Image 1 (cartoon, rainbow, N blue to C red):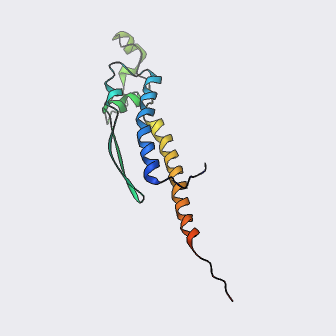
Image 2 (image 1 turned 90 degrees about the vertical axis):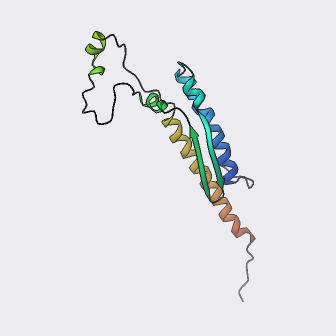
Length: 143
């Protein structure tokens, strides 16, 4: 990917930051995550502060969105010894629970891929800026 001289860390980061909201919402739409629409509408941008030497970006969404992403929720808890009886097909049939939850990866997969893209692009931009420092040096002839 070619790096344009006009690219900057702040400009590219801002574009990436804005695009993440669209990516997450598109993933939710594709996976059919829209029972009430609350999770989709909760995805929004938080604080953005970026300069050429670093910064921070924040996003907000309802916490249960992570459970949707992982296919967990009611009945799962930290420290469970592994006896998730509610996943047993017989138990589910007897208690009329229907099919167990399935992962709907709207967040983690998109996040990982997008962070890798951001990392590569910023490495290109910073590398181009660094090599540009040497464009202004004048060479001396040795005699």
